[in-house]
Image (cartoon, rainbow over all chains, first blue to last red; front, side):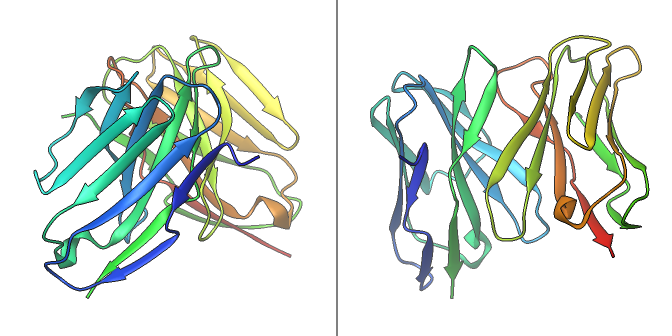
Amino acid sequence: DTAVSQTPKYLVTQMGNDKSIKCEQNLGHDTMYWYKQDSKKFLKIMFSYNNKELIINETVPNRFSPKSPDKAHLNLHINSLELGDSAVYFCASRDRGTDTQYFGPGTRLTVL
Amino acid sequence: ELKVEQNPLFLSMQEGKNYTIYCNYSTTSDRLYWYRQDPGKSLESLFVLLSNGAVKQEGRLMASLDTKARLSTLHITAAVHDLSATYFCAGPFGNEKLTFGTGTRLTIIP
């Protein structure tokens, strides 16, 4: 009964490849997010969707494209992967009632 | 430019001692959040502070918010090893997105 799940947990790939990370939440929340955590543990928001609509799009290279097929899913597709994309990517969903964000387990992306 | 600064960045403390982590932010916010992250794990919500003067306690942790001073604190009482983790403060700072602090890596030494 995982609340926010991500797949895969680990992703190792070569520069230039295209990859996707999937996120699903079963909490019934309307708002979902993607965050990037770098090697120094610094967390930064990338995107936010509310009811399948993009509401936050930070200064992220357009190689990154989020897609929300429904409000329970928010996927992240990355084209032409670069070394600097290596990080842990966290998906989260927000309970507006308690104003709490629930984070997924993270996807550790390593670009070689 | 919005800044959310935590100090200290690293904290090593002995079991049984008390200490405080500070979160200073550079722009107005009426709410503040604290999260915990264990090594290699996800983030866990600890506290949601929704107004000036808010104080919340859970076990050995107590968080407070002073919106006028743009300061939140996370106080640890009689630390135990299980509290070793990285603690982040975060705030919406006027918009929908969360901006996270730099994190404080806490190590409790027996």
